[in-house]
Amino acid sequence: MAQEEQVLVVERKVLERVGMFQGLTFDVERYLSEFFVAGVPRFMPRSLAEGDPTFKQLIPYVIMTHGGKYLTYVRGKRAGETRLVGHRSIGIGGHINPVDDMPLFDADFRDAYLTGVAREVAEEVSVQASQTDRVVALINDDSTEVGQVHLGIVHYWALDDAKVTKREQMITQMTFMTQAELQEVRDSLETWSQLCLDNLDEMAQRADSEMPVRDRSGS
Image (cartoon, rainbow, N blue to C red; front, top):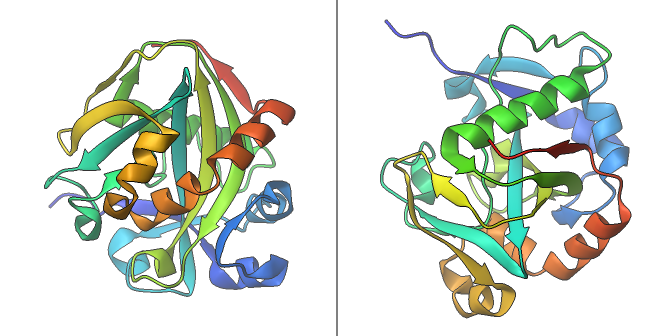
């Protein structure tokens, strides 16, 4: 029998203690400095986490941009989150799973998390370009069944080339679109992507002013 997937979570009460919010917040460090405290993040079986809103699954949501356009795709039938099938997205990423080099009780867990983000992205797409990674926002949407058990960490990747190809079968209709083009199809976007689309200008400004969390070469 295959071992059940373990996913990274924090207790909802941690979020509530720092300050519950609905939609987007740009006060990133205030939250991440609490989420990544030794002993706070943990792994639990995904089947339990999906049905227990007392925990929030931490989901990296990577927005990729080049030349004034943003990577976008439609989630196909093979998507791991069936409740999002058929929706267009501007976020690449997924659950963070345990690996041997991810110590939950290490003071440097944030670095381990970033390694996990890179691994999750690489499972979905191949980025043949250098990129600068900045965390620009957090997403919380308790108005939907999916949102009640997930918390998005929005990464803004500025690419030096638009060379991105898909690896996962669940990714369909992948292309780069301008902000105006995305607004034209806004109703087809999943909720998180709608929230991000409405705040792309602010994200771009913050990405220009924030220090990158990591620079990477294409692979």
